[in-house]
Image (tube, rainbow, N blue to C red; front, side, top):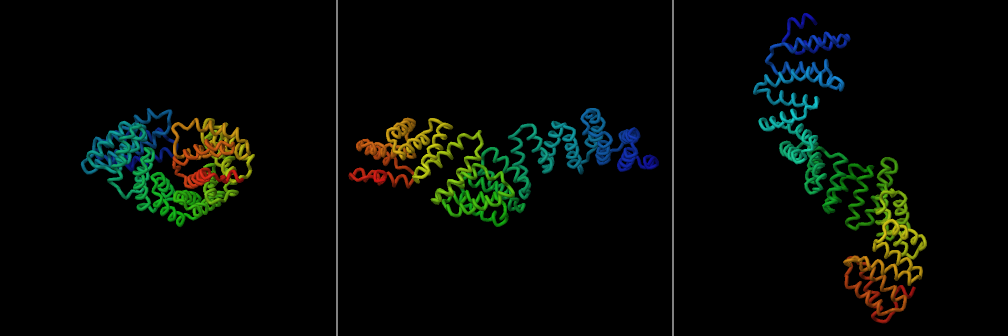
Length: 437
């Protein structure tokens, strides 16, 4: 090795071989001597300096934090010599490698300057990729996004860059921009499960339900045992009010998640499953799912807990079953989120169902007082007040409230029909279904 160093002093591989030999023999001082000899060479070949710079990084490891400043001063001159001796032919490759070295030594400003020079002078794709990371590290979000957009424009078939750009748009809450990036990532890269799932949620956010369903149907063919794609398809079918198909995929998602992805089966999952079963009038099954949702709702989510409790309690009231248990749930919902008109209405309706009409009227009027302004969705509260007045024998007030409820023209078809029927019966002097019961 000594002879090789004497005969071939301008060959970088000789210094690498000698330095590694001495390091292996635990003769670090001799390895340092070898690199000092390399540093004294008059070479004008940038590749020589890059290669010896890499070897220097093994003799003076930059990962040793306690010596980082000292070792950086030893290694950096090799790379600076490479920059100082670049030719037009190798300027892009040499400058990029020096920029990468600067990233390793945490000289991020210097790395950024070199990459900006490369993109300006050579339109370097690799420099842009590094520059995107550097802008991100410096919290220069606009520059990072602009650089990534330029990368995708320059390399439209790079699936990974498309994914990164979709993530950036998602952070900015711009799903309409994220969608084409994910679609391209799937087309160019074959598509990973994460691509399909992310695209599905983006389509859901933009209410592109037909596209979401088509994607979901493709996803379950490609990944039939993955619970997330079934969950997503269940949500897609639910958005189109295809309750039976939705329930089918909720069941598939639950089955597959039980053994592979149990964390998916959280309170949100069971709430969505439960309210879908309710739409199919499978009330017992719906109740079981909603009770699961309640038990799995964390304490720090009181709004979600109250919503599920109120939904389940009110469902039982409407079915005239488990009235006392419904009352407990609705009372708890009101404790968690007091002064919520919908929950107070449920409490009033519970008292109505139990025959406590004065208490029911008091609670229902309290709910009404909070409706400022009143909206079409509030028609059911006015309906309940009208029916309570009727149960108390005040037909005039009952008629007034049912007329007002009818005039709101609620968007809920079942409630609208029910109000119309009750109003006609009252106007005609007949008894409502509630009175008959």
